[in-house]
Image 1 (cartoon, rainbow, N blue to C red):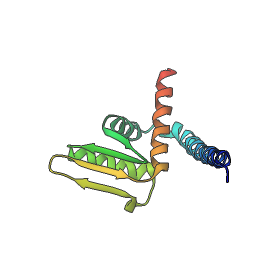
Image 2 (image 1 turned 30 degrees about the vertical axis):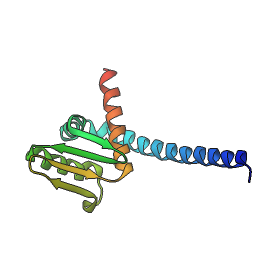
Image 3 (image 1 turned 45 degrees about the vertical axis):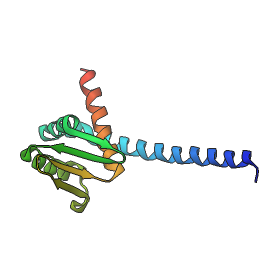
Length: 127
């Protein structure tokens, strides 16, 4: 097999994978947009988004929330259960000496929260 054919195959594969990823991201964004207007009326929802924005992070393909406040960890755990609606077993928590971390290793969860963040930015910038 020629080197050019190998490169062409790699390029086609890369394009196909990127297209599939974009379709999945757009699907999650559309679902988040449909939920967003009703959720914006809920202060618990907006406060949780704000806390994630302040204390959360995106490491690779998972959602992560880290803080030294035990109360904030409990709040975010309830927020995740209420709005993300995933199996309880997927929510992991690690407690260290001076802080705690919640993380969910699901890319679709991360994409949904990122979509909500983009929508809330647009919501307030349009006012």
